Image 1 (tube, rainbow, N blue to C red):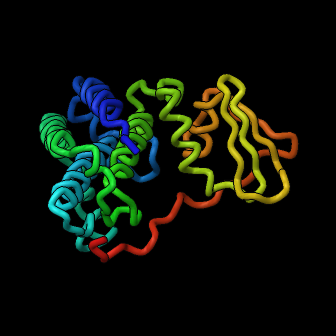
Image 2 (cartoon, rainbow, N blue to C red; image 1 turned 180 degrees about the horizontal axis):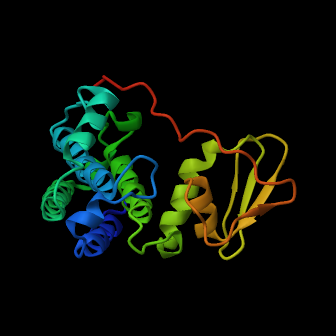
Length: 236
């Protein structure tokens, strides 16, 4: 599968424009994520780019490495240690690491996207899709003007497919504005949730949709974000 590299690069440029005018006070202010400032969100996006570049560099050499040797604790420690950067420092680090990630991806040939990575026990292509989600979803969390209505339609459809596991088996989603339907599992049809594709994606992602999706029986409770499977250690 050819990953949406060009679409992620467009998201990177959008993110850079979004934070271009932030000052230190605005960076320190609360984001839409509980307990996180805008600086935390930017620190996460920056280190996420570094981590994916690390995975890609090794994958292109036929090597498997962990995204974080210290697991989620290392990830969280890096975010906490760098969240307090100045606005200028955040911009510089974000630009450097997104550029580094894009440069690694530019070296990947068609066959390289199938190379295995430890991230979700998937392949290199999956990290591009993941970065696409990370960039657009967290741009909403920055509360700098981007809303789910600004998400590209194909990003919204992809996010829904990725997040279907948060729904009970038998749930059906129906987008009213595009020709998309999704089903959870192979069981008997249950709750049918309808809404615009971006609103469905925002709801599944735990963000506020412009118009809330609806279901005759009431919206089902969402389960946790799709878990990471055990880390792969093979070199297949």
